[in-house]
Structure formats: C-alpha cells, structure tokens
Amino acid sequence: MYEKKIRGELAEKFVMEFERDKLKEYSFFPIRQSVDDVGLGYDILSYDSDGKEMFIEVKSIKNNSFFWSENEIATSKEFKDDYFIYLVLFENNKPIKIKQIIQNPYNQIFNKNL
Image (cartoon, rainbow, N blue to C red):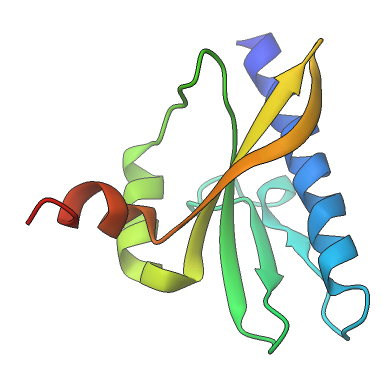
C-alpha cells in the first residue's frame, strides 16, 4: 500500500510538470486537486489550449494494469470528453513517460461495444 501511494504521488507530480509545460505559453495553470480532496474522482484540474477544463485521473501502471475506482468511473461518465486518464510508465521506481492518454474512458470501455 505504501509503495502504491508513493508511486501515485510521483506520477501525479510527473503529470503536473507535463501539464505546466504544455500550458506555459497560455495563461492557464493546472491544479493538483488530490492534495485537498481525494474523493473528487480525478487528481488534476487542467486546461486545453483554448481554456477548456480537463479533469485528469493519473494512474501509475504496473504490469500493464491499473485500478479504476467506482467513484472515478462515475466521474468519467459525468464529465465525458472532458475526463482523461493519464497512464504513467515507471522504470527503476521513477516515472519516465506518459504511456497513454485516454479521453472519455467511460465511453471507451463501457460504450464501445454497444
């Protein structure tokens, strides 16, 4: 459990840096929401280049898998295309890259086969 918490912290900081770099030419700044409220269903509030909100859930992947809670699933369903999962790949216990960004994961997982 401790290792999972540490990996989660490192992954969130890694994504925060990625989002800061992405937005450095704009007047938008990402906010790490998970520090104040872990029950929101996402970790980071960020923006696209037009200022549209992005609700980002950060997942550190291990053995090509991750855990997605019921609350996160419900939040994804609510925010639709504004909700993203960032999958962070680790090497030697350090985040090295964002392996994949999944937009509207609820639709990708639950509605794709309809």
